Image (cartoon, rainbow, N blue to C red; front, side, top):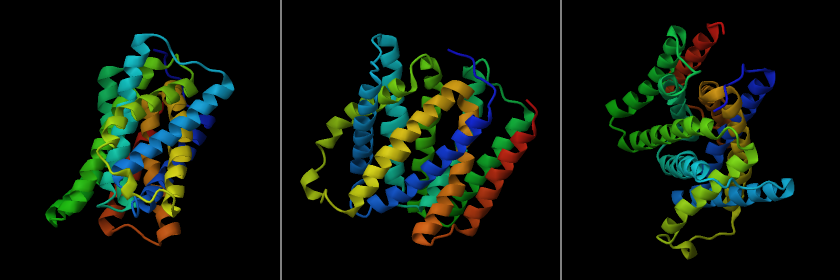
Length: 294
């Protein structure tokens, strides 16, 4: 496992770009849900992304790893990073807005901080980092508590689904460090391929013929596959392997900002008061973490 590098300007640009792309994914999912089932959205999002990445591999004349150790990790990553989160996000967005879904993912840095401290040897947390992520976590707690106290059980289900997706992302991020020797395209292609294969048996439980495949919502699914899935995966894998899980986890702070912006652009929707308060706490947590000198 390679040691992480000190983040450079290019890494911060990659983080910002990734946040903008992932923020748009929630909008695309919301559009796709008008026609497709959550599982169908997740499966074809991964399937089309797999085809795209396999084509990139062929152009670059790259090859899959041949050792069982790499494939064991990649199978786990494919499930934790793609199959499980993409389904949970699509399912959860049936009950919550795109901006709320994005804000819920901000719990990621808190989980990443604790796990990476005990699992990795070069990503230890300090007092300021701890205070920062706790503030971010409090923001998420406000969203959950607001819906719990107001007995909005459907919204609560959607928010808990986002937490489940976050756990998958964090777990896969830690595992990705263990295959940092693989080229980014190979790593991404492999985990998407395993995710597709893991979801394939469940596809037969759905009546595909009941869905009108060729319609406007298909554009949303194709967009999800190419940009927030395939291309974003290449950026994410490279960032995790180069600058670590904790740096990568900060994208969770930025995604809500872009999701709120895209939601306003496409749907003319703005978050509730509790969502704004949660966002302020999350951004405050990010600022406090940045106060610490490396």
